[in-house]
Length: 128
Image 1 (cartoon, helix red, strand yellow):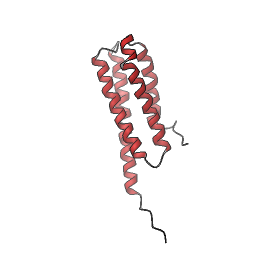
Image 2: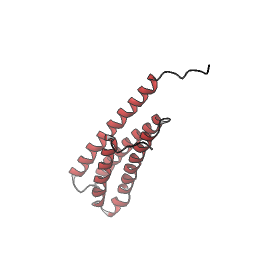
Image 3: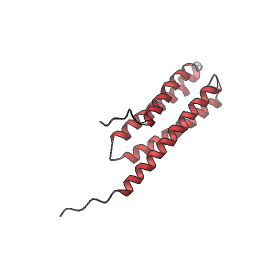
Image 4: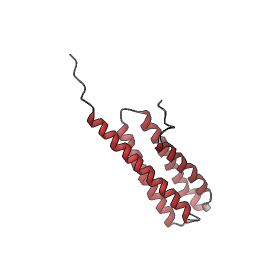
C-alpha cells in the first residue's frame, strides 16, 4: 500500500477530523447525535477516500471525484449545522469552514491533475 501520511490533503483532513471531534462534543445532545454524527461520518469518509485515491492507479479519477463530492457535502452540512444553531460559537464554524474549503480546493486540484496525467499518457502499443 502506498504511503499517504505525507500528503497535504491527508494532513488537512486529519486536522479537520480531530478539530471536528472537539467541536461536536460541545453540540447539544440532539445535534450531537444527528448532524454531528453525520459530520463525523463524512469527515472519516473523506480520510478514507484520500487513502484510497493515493493507493490506487486504476480508477483514481473516480475515487477523486467521490472525494470532491464528499468535500462539497461536508461544506453544505456545516452550513446546515450553523443555520440549525448547532455551533456554540461562530469561531468553531469559521475554522471548520476554512479547513473544508482548503480541503475541497486541494481535492479538486488533485482531480484535475489526475485527469491531465491520464490525457498525457501515450496509448499502449498493440502486440507485435
